[in-house]
Image 1 (cartoon, rainbow, N blue to C red):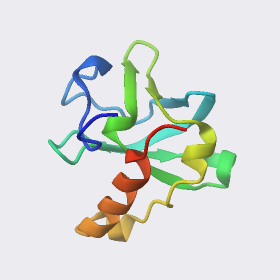
Image 2 (cartoon, rainbow, N blue to C red):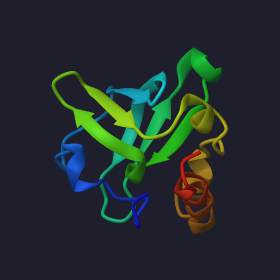
Image 3 (cartoon, rainbow, N blue to C red):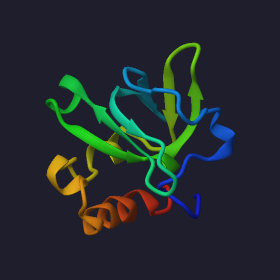
Length: 116
């Protein structure tokens, strides 16, 4: 796992400044949703994924460090977590997301755990 869970790894194929909104997101075991919002801010990069009906309209915040590959041609993003790990993640809270460092610590702590 990356030392910086909030940064895109250089091996992902992501080009900073390129919009990922609308890209499909694939977990290690299948499709989980599409990107609703993203940031490529240094040290605070993330994806907000709309999971749709898969988990009843829940949005999840995925730190950029979970991204293993971006396929711009197919508009797909691959992450190194299972559907279950993402389903069990703390729910995205748009109010806490802005300006609450503790919330980002909670999310980063969850995704920063070693893979099962």
